[in-house]
Amino acid sequence: MIPLLIGKKRDGGELTRAEIEQIVLGYVRGEVPDYQVAAWLMACYLRGLTDAETLALTEVMAASGDQLDLSTIGAPTLDKHSTGGVGDKTSLVLVPLLAAGGVAIAKMSGRGLGFTGGTVDKLESIPGYRTELTAQEMLAQVQRIGCCLAGQSASLAPADKLLYALRDATATVESIPLIAASIMSKKLAGGAQHILLDVKVGAGAFMTTRERAEQLAGTLVRIGEGAGRRTHAMLTDMSQPLGYTVGNALEVREAIETLRPDLPSHPRFEALVCALAGHAFALCGLSPDAAEGQARAQRLLQSGDALNKFCQMVEAQGGDPRVVDDLNLLPRAPLVVEYPAPESGYVAEVAPRTVALAALQLGAGRQKKEDAIDPAVGVEALKCVGDPVQAGEPVFRIHARTESSLQQARTTLQSALRILETPVPPQGVLLA
Image 1 (tube, rainbow, N blue to C red):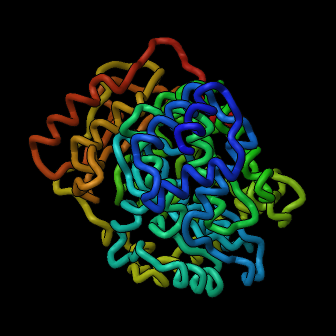
Image 2 (image 1 turned 180 degrees about the vertical axis):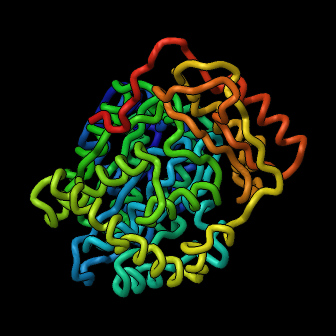
């Protein structure tokens, strides 16, 4: 039977939900061998999937394991997903900000791999913070304080993990329907009635072109709406690092600085957080539109309410809330060296993947899932595209554990920066 289904897809046919279930759930149960599923994935990659097939695949994957039931929470429930990028610490600020504004959010995140960082790794640089919570613990915490930010539960959408590993081994990762089904299966299993999607575009994102990002965003929204969830997607810029910092404890520090009303924050990063929050409040019916929601988000930051919610979340998950007042409690690298601009002019490029590579060389990321990371190390990008710069002025600050990794990162960063003599327009963070 399975070879017939592979052939049907190979020849451009449309599979029914029952046929997709037979393949996917059969694979999860060990009844369908990986070589047959690999052949089916390649057929999907080459022939594409219809909207009906994509929705069916997503819902089958979501139903392959446990699903959170958030129906007992007396507040609008929302889940947020970012397609990832360099220096993307948005969830660290957005989750407590939304909870402070009346949105219940049980956010599950992953670890970093390659050029993208992982929210779980960042959280674990907070002393004592527990990222491994059971579904019951997550639900209880959200009922009590309105939010939790934890690692992805292995029991949610187990089909996704199995299929992704096979896609990775068979060069079928880049299919937009398969990418969208992977993302949304975890969102549907998470149980929220509202889904907010941050689709990154640019050199530091998986979707490097706007056309591909728009295709992905459209597919994600159609899945969400088809599954009965109110869904909104935004396109945001990832042509340069997001915010000042790339590295785990460094990004936690920047997130806390953004939450603290008494400290300055990176304008592009704060603009993104408030824009996402504005759409979330509107999506959940807590603001009449995104503009009013954005103003509400800014008030929650300025009042300290979002910061207080962050403290509650950290304490609820075993972390030390004193980090909010004493940033020195976060891990610190022994070597901190500034990298000066080689010439005067205007910043035309801060290549995000090159900065990410330097952070990886310092030990802030991992090449393989089993690699250990150093929470203290990383890179600060002190300038954005469009900023004027003088020769000798610091443009990067390197946080290193060893002299050899410092020198390696310094060499890499030489190619991350491009300076022009003539003014360069700044790049906005919001694209659509």
